Each structure stands twice: as structure tokens, then as C-alpha cells.
Length: 321
Ligand code: AVJ
Image (cartoon, rainbow, N blue to C red; front, side, top):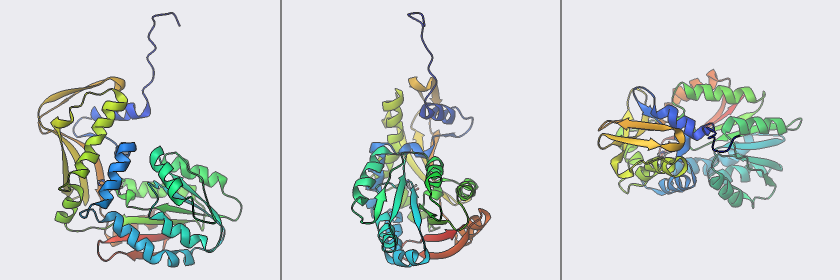
């Protein structure tokens, strides 16, 4: 290349996704997976400690109460993997129960390197379980696990915490179908899903008075500033959580407090926001019991068993291909 020539490098995937989401006509949006950088993952951990956010504790209670029964239903030689392990705290119950019957390898699949490191450290002491972390997107990681499976081994996929709810219908069904297509007959999926509950309770959970969820949401703009040389003024955006009755989902948005122009150098982008205009950053679908049974079956799974938390309706469903 002659000196002085400027190479226009292709955008990173993050930059391309930001560009695409913020140039959409109508509702601007950003993919929720980008909420989880190092700081975002820590803020999410803090959300899980909030009394208003019952999801994680419910998930953990059901797993703690029923992991032995879950393990009893799953026989034979296994490989276990988890889509979005986070710090892996609630996974411990399942891994310990499964490991009473055989040794196996556990593959946490996680795009956040820092969360993956915590997970490997926290769960590294379980005897009879080898841990191999995969810093990948969910389906890429699952393909890798399927490629590594040995003859006679069944795969157990853990998809906990109601992350499925971030794939707003019908994307949830499509995602389950994609999982199903990577799996073989006899493989397992343990699916955690948050259930429908009163809107007021959901709003408290996603717009907590301490402002942790607001910080979690706003961090997405801070991340764009840090990683893509953006100039978002965080004080000019506010966190909004609303319950959409039609889609039965909690939506998180970031609302522009005034008309403003934002430049994101590395995304090759200048965007105008009108006063009151929002960026849609996350969808958290809340399930009805029949709806879960329907998508599981439509995706090619059979329901083996289901356990529900009584305090904060949350289901753990054991599905089999
Ligand atoms: C980790 C995706 C299950 O949707 O409840 C928490 C993320 N967002 N508070 C959820 C989240 C706002 C969480 N999931």
C-alpha cells in the first residue's frame, strides 16, 4: 500500500450490529447480547441480588430442590453444556447431582470472557466434572460440543435463567429448533423460563428503585462509547421498562431526553434522536404453561418433566429429543 493511503477496515460485528440497529426506520434497537461486557455482567450479577428481581432466586430454588430428581431421569454417559453460563452459581446443583452417577465434561458456552472465567473458577472444585469453557455464541459452542461427543454419549443442554425469553416469539421457537437440529435423538434440554405474573411486579423487577437495572441498560451506551468511540451523553438518556400486554414481554428501552445528535466513529455513523425517542435494548418474554409446552413440541422435543417455583412463578422444564 502506498504511504498515506487509508485502508477502510471492515466494521467489527459489534459495530455493524450497532449501525444496523440505530439506522432502522421506525423503532431503533440494539441487540441485548451486547449488554454483557465485563461491567454489564457484573451489573447483571447485582440485579440478581435485588429483592425486586425474583427470577434468579426462583431458578436457583427449583434447581436446588429438584436436581436429584433431574439427575435420576437422565441416565448413561453424558456431556453437559450450558448456553450462557454466567457465573455458573445455580448450575452447581445440577452438576453435583449428575456427577453422583458418572464423570463427565461440562462445557460452559459464554460470550463474556470475564463471566466464563468466574464460572470456571467457581465450579472447578466439583469432583468428577472436567470444565472446558467455550467463549462462543450459543449455537457455535453447541456445534463444537456436538463435534466432540463420543459414541454412546448423550448431550445435556442447560439453558437456564430464562434467557430464552430474550428471543421474543417466534424467535424462541426458531432458536429451540436450531438447538434441536444440532442434537440427536435421546439428547436432553433443561430449559428455565420465567412465567407470566402481574405487570406491576414485573415493572418493579425491571425498573428497580435502586437504579441497578437502569445502570445495566445505560452501560450499553457507555460500552459503545468505550469500544466504538461513540459520544453518547449518558445523562441525556433514561432507562424505561414497560410491560407489553400484547406480546407478554417486559421491554427495556433507553429514552432520549431531548433532540440530540450522536456520533459513533468506529461504526461510521451519525444518528439523530428526537426528544422522547427510544432505543429498544431488550425483550423479556413471560411464558404461559401451555405456551411452553407448545413451543417445545413444535421444536421437536418431548416434555419429560416440569418443576415450578411457587413463590415466583418460574419453570424448569426437562425436554428430550
Ligand atoms: C438474563 C436475560 C434472563 O431478561 O430477566 C435482567 C436480563 N434484564 N434485568 C432477564 C435482565 C433486565 C435477564 N436475563
